[in-house]
Picture 1 (cartoon, rainbow over the protein chains, first blue to last red):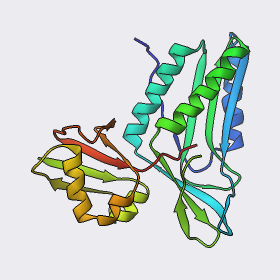
Picture 2: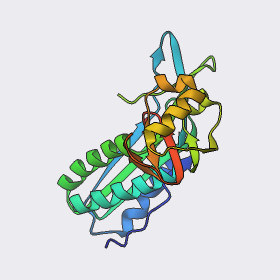
Picture 3: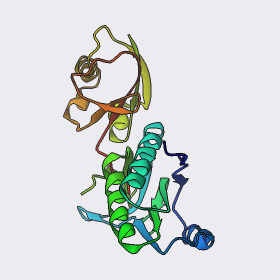
Length: 147
Length: 77
């Protein structure tokens, strides 16, 4: 069995560029890595019926999400030759233009990270019970549906 | 059978609560849902999946006890 532990994925609020920068810096000691690939999900100021989205408030079924994140990690490591992988997702309010999802995969070789990253992001979108409430500038809201 | 029911996202708005504990006499997912639809008629119009103890289950599934979560379409990322 795989010994990689399940990690805490959720971050309260937006994911800062400092946090992302520090995550990259932490990998300088892992010198078998030759390629990183990063996905950053950003909150879009969609305009819906003349109203603009100013923020998304994320909630989740956290226990189920932790289990599903762990399954996605295990599945990804079994499919791709990765050295390491990190996933962070926001909970709570994230303003338009801020980062709400950070996926970071690393491998000795570039080909693995291109396909692994797309796989992980699509799995997260499909399997993680996270719910986004789009808050408009006039403070009304609607529930986001992924396209 | 006593079930702990959790509502997420839009569904918590429809029911006006995040969770509740209810007693049921029949025990398939669809039996439980028909009781919930009586209690919250607007729930019937909504698109959602049901998870029992953190796994998605089908409507025919027979549930024992524990936690049932009603999950609207996922919209993470």
